[in-house]
Length: 263
Image (tube, rainbow, N blue to C red):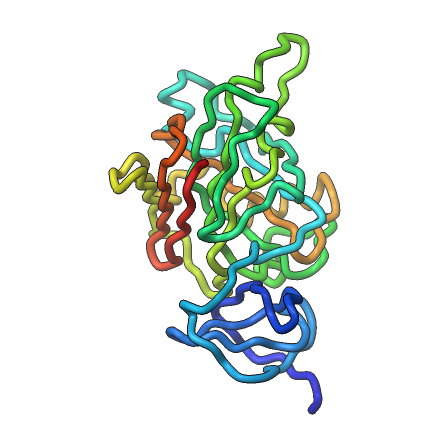
């Protein structure tokens, strides 16, 4: 059977046959495994299965994960900070990624507060190097949901060096999922973070300082972005520490719900 590329709305990664990771596309409550990937050619492979049977994996295998800081007007105003003139970001270790419904594990080497941060995440579909704004859409695979978990007390522990990357790079601290939506429109959507069922974050994505396409263009002028790389767009007000046993749900209107437990 020849490989083909067919427009597809939702992509996931899951444990496939013989325990091998595989990509699949979601159609209502069914999941169809594929041979290939959303970044290249692919075709359906084998029988579909029920969505409830999926063993979830992070939807991407990135070479890097970029996390934005202070990218929402409301948070900058609340913290009495200036509006940045360029994107402010750190790098998160790809090994920190966790999947939908996977537990977020308390680090053995850190005893301080661990915060949740509900965010929109962008997934690069084609290599980007100094891409003009008007061409960015052709390089974006789609969007997913992120819980950008952070060990906040580490960041300023050493006054001589802000430890943003370490604070975000513990195993399971980079939660992504459940899927990548290739047609998602963020312009009128809001992020809702619920902690043990209580809403703690509710903010519009339209409040971004650097909206997604501008952000990707600007970042591509700093570094080459590869297919599968992820950019977390930052969070707004309402990020707080979690207690062990906390259930966190992050919902973005029209995109889905990402669920995890801390501890």
